[in-house]
Image (cartoon, rainbow, N blue to C red):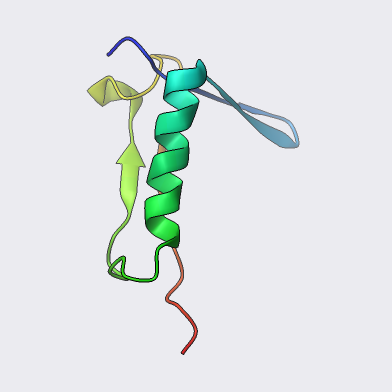
Length: 69
């Protein structure tokens, strides 16, 4: 994958770094989580070992709360 995100943890902060394509892809994934018709079981993982992040990144899991009724 040519457009990878880098995720680094520093004391007191997490840095997410990527080119425009990688950041837009992340935004689209986050928008999917925000849609009211997205199943409550839906979540996604980004893992360095699978080539989804730069090799020195920490892995991420994105999840969402169920919608208020």
